[in-house]
Length: 403
Ligand SMILES: [Zn+2]
Image 1 (cartoon, rainbow, N blue to C red):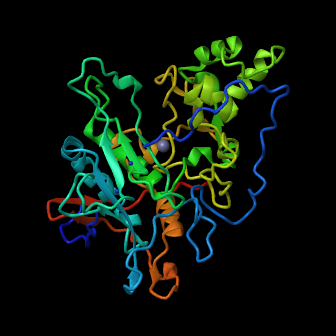
Image 2 (cartoon, helix red, strand yellow):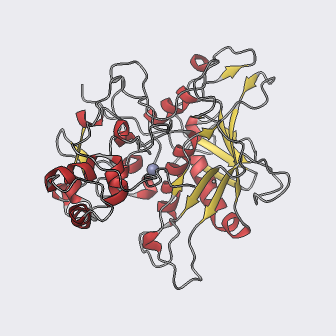
């Protein structure tokens, strides 16, 4: 319990959409006569530390691609980079605003003034995106559940978000966060679980990729593709190869390697593997700049909100290590999204804070980087949002490091 004297911050109010990250290949008839080489990370020794979009620098390569959200109000003494959201419709606003508020609060230790990042409504008076005052680049948050529709299958609905800000387009609603974790009929769909997933999706929106897909993850994590629930079906489909991806004489074991480790094959025959394939093997489209090889340097953060639970998408989720899709190689320990199997105990980690500070450094007007002047505290924060929501947020979980 925290005393009511915990330092408080009021999150700046502002007013911002989902897509499938990896659309199927344009041509499904492409044949591989040999196994395509699975590229190793060529840059794993660089000092770039975190995995996600590249930071925004003065001469940044992200212009034209995906990057951190842009600087607003550059004349203010302390420049901010707000993620500005709106809701796709009134129902989404009603069901998801409380979830978004809690998730934003739980990110508080990483937000302004620890970094230049803020998260709020694009327009304080217009929650729904269709309002004329809402900007075209606002993040469109939608509740994809359909409790009134008997035909709707929650098992087929997954939360998805765009990763970072798209500088290559001015299309309306190009930034999306489609949310599926308020699932009628799903006993595990608690509010705490919804908040946990919303925290994770907001991490994507900030520009963060999955921690367990870092190109250097194999040094820390073991990935067991055959424990995926969809594995057997994927193997059958790859053997039958109705999309003619493979030459007829490509051995089944090589096809299995591809559906587990190669994005193009996984997209077609084992889509669940896409969320576990190393980022440097993810370029389905070579022009897709959303998976730059941008990682390594710091240790993999097993408590990150951007890591998957060991048993997610598993065939036998309760079987322990023999059923896990992914686990810490050292000691065969599980990993949990946000550091705890209990969703109500989920928090961001100190590593998550550092990633946000790297992508969204505090800047003074005139371009001076203020990141070293700001430090996030180890104390609980009292967070108020729109004067209608308040929460005491415990300090971030600190990574366990073996000395
Ligand atoms: Zn994710």
